[in-house]
Structures are given as C-alpha cells and as structure tokens.
Image (cartoon, rainbow, N blue to C red):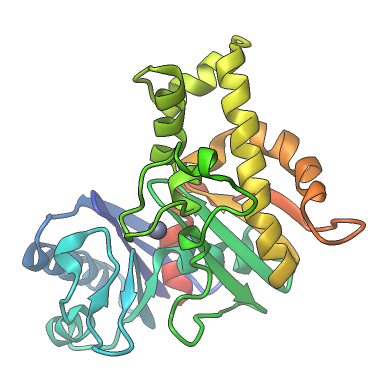
Length: 295
Ligand SMILES: [Zn+2]
C-alpha cells in the first residue's frame, strides 16, 4: 500500500491507497505554520498509519514549491516557512525511511493521468488555477520535471497577445515581473481585475452568482477570463501539443469555462483544427494527495 501526503498551507492530508488506487484510509490535520510543527504533523500522521496498517511500500509528499537542484533545499513554496529548509533529509531522519517529494501541480497532473480525466492519454498537461497558477506535464504516466525543475511553470510567463492596457489591469506578480499569466488566471487575479474595473469588493463566487443573474459585468468578466485562458493554453498547445488539458483548483469549478473555451481556443492555436480537449479534473480536491501516493 502507498501513503500520499498533501502538504498545504492550511491543512495536511494523508491518504492510504492500495495498488489499484482504492482509498483505504485518510486523515486531515491543520498545518502548523512553522517548520518544526509541519514536520511533526507529518511524522504523527505517518506513524499513526504505520501502526494501523503494516504493509506500507512507499511514502510520497506533494507540496507547493520544489527542491532546489542547486542546494537540495525547498524553494518557491508559498508556505514560506518551508523555504530554505532541508525538508527531505530532516523528514527521512525522523521517519528512518525514504520519502519522495514533488511539486503539488505535478502531483495533481500525475493523479489525473494515472486514473483520472487523462487516464487514456499519453501527453497530459494539468493546470491548477487556484490561489496561484501552476501546471504539470506527465507523459506516459511519468512526470516531466525539466532541466531546471521548471517544466509547466507557464503561470510566470507573460499573457500572450496582450497590450499595455490589459497588463495594467492586473497586479504586479510576486515573482517580480509584470503581466504574468498567474496574475490574470488565479482566483485572486480574476477577482482583483473585476473589482478594479467595477469598483466593487466581491469574491469570485459572487461574480459567478451575478453571471447566473445575467449581470453584464459578470458576463464580460467571464468572457475575458476564458479568452485569456484560451490565449495562455494556445501557447502550450503550440509548443507541447498535449493530448488533453485538465483543469484543477478553485477556478476550475466554473462551468462557463468548459462551455466556451474549446471554441474560443481554435482562434489562437496555429492549426486548422484543435482536437485537444480542455476538461475538468475527476478527482477534485483529492487529486493532489492521490498524486502524492502514486509517486
Ligand atoms: Zn510571476
């Protein structure tokens, strides 16, 4: 049996699955927002599972950020207390066994590629549009990390076919650059642009509710969002040309996306037809923890 841990900024979830992917056991605890507390939480979860179930073959952990190839320390995590820490070696010392650690967008994509929306496809591009915007590439059920551990980080490239007026709608990105795709497609990006244009202070859920009431501001905001998503993903198709694109994260629950994007994207892809479907994930919230277990 395999254990997966999804280490998030607010909760840490453990999942035990058998070799067919059936859920045997799961547990969630709040994440302590400091390094030692985070480590202790994971050790307690795994110890509890090992006491209840004996035959554990592997432990995989999905988390934001990555292990730096230069220093072996955690980098780019938005759970900032993890950055610069030798997380893997500390955890292995405490557990007295090997663990696999992977970026959460890669875990999401692996999960959907193994037995989710991408299970019948070879090249799977998985996108998380949530608090941030990240992606993973899985080919024949294997994660493609790239030479710099940056494969799939399309959220920090600039929005294609944009102009200064459009770029100025979004906030400057925390990465230090302006016009990043993440600042348009993440939940905070989408909401921030709506509130800036309309002088409001509402949430993405409120905007979707307004859309259902045929509010013209909300219709325009969702049309613009889908157009930006289509432009962003057309660049992915023009380079990687995946068999399927699977969306996850909070924004992926907006049905308007699937009703419109497959038509809009054909305007931007350099091909006379676009076979690539853009679909919603199957495993929902548990995709991250399932992907961690499959590591
Ligand atoms: Zn950025």
